Image 1 (cartoon, helix red, strand yellow):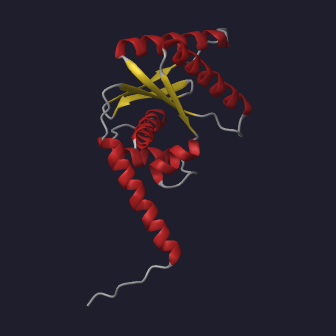
Image 2 (image 1 turned 180 degrees about the vertical axis):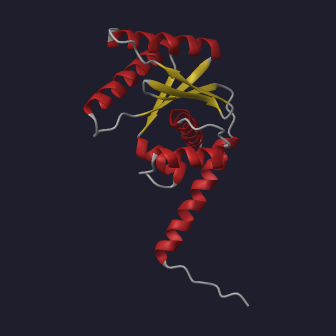
Length: 185
């Protein structure tokens, strides 16, 4: 006869949270809205995802001697072209971190500003999530590392690659769907 271990309160809470997260994930993955959602992981190597099978990475690395302003113009133009070509109605992204490398935070913030501007001009819905919320949704832990995000994308989203920007974009898309489902209730 098997011995059944009684769970303490902390273990029960953790187990229930995991069950809820997996249920939320299943519903988000099954959700297929009648409109296209574009998820962006903003960076110089900018991950994007429209569906579980339609994702990639745009590289905005500038040649030496090229102004940063050129990067912002390239990003805005690429975004506008992609939105028009794919009839995007909702854009989802990650919020800039509050702390960390100041240059990276400023860079991320500028990309987010461009996304907000483009969404306002085109009449698109714009939603954003803190990195900790995305990580917690993906892994159950708000402090997950890049490797954890990739591993969970492989396990739960059938992600075939190794690119953390693409994996993050897939998770942003998934949490955006989860958020949209909850707003329909």
